[in-house]
Length: 264
Image 1: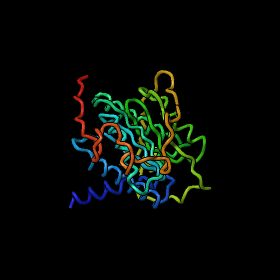
Image 2 (image 1 turned 180 degrees about the vertical axis):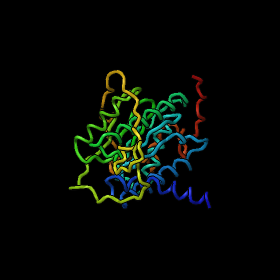
Image 3 (image 1 turned 45 degrees about the vertical axis):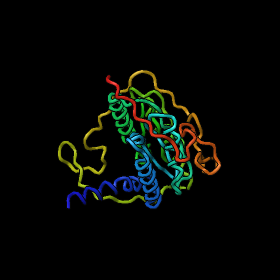
Image 4 (image 1 turned 60 degrees about the horizontal axis):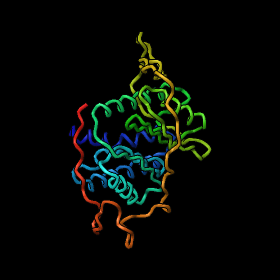
């Protein structure tokens, strides 16, 4: 029974997070389903775990692929798999070719947490509207901003976190007039240090944010514009030229073993 409850909670978490943002329940459900389908297809196609380190984020039918693969051929194959999902309208491929590095991954996780804390602490930003992906010190932001100021402030918060090399924003402006009604979520009463009840979460325990150091990292547009469905050409379509790495065969790319782990 406990295992079933945990599984349900894990499945509902991304949907609930979407409901607390400025997306409707239906939009959050569609995005969560699309992300799950893309990730499932990647894992099914990835012999020897070649797509295990590819992260998938979906907002408003827009897919952001990030992470690491062993070859340029795998990078292209990851995008092809994303486009095989019918509910996808746009794909941004930010997957890098490189080696696994434990120290780098730990640092990226720390950066992600610091950015999330800064967004939460800023009353002019709704942190649940933003998805944060960090790879090799590069920050990718995805989401729907309510105002130009919120979009700018989110990117600036990310740029001042220590260890960030650059910030790439895929955040879109919310097109409709206003956000949908909030969904009320029951929670245990909060209290301050003296035990007095409070209604503002920020009035409870303080949010510990590491100080920034050095000059802010540059905030840059994507190096390549996201691909829309009309622009994408399937390298495996009938009559298409074989993609690099296929060795001219008709079954697709050849599996490439992951490179050795570096010891840092």
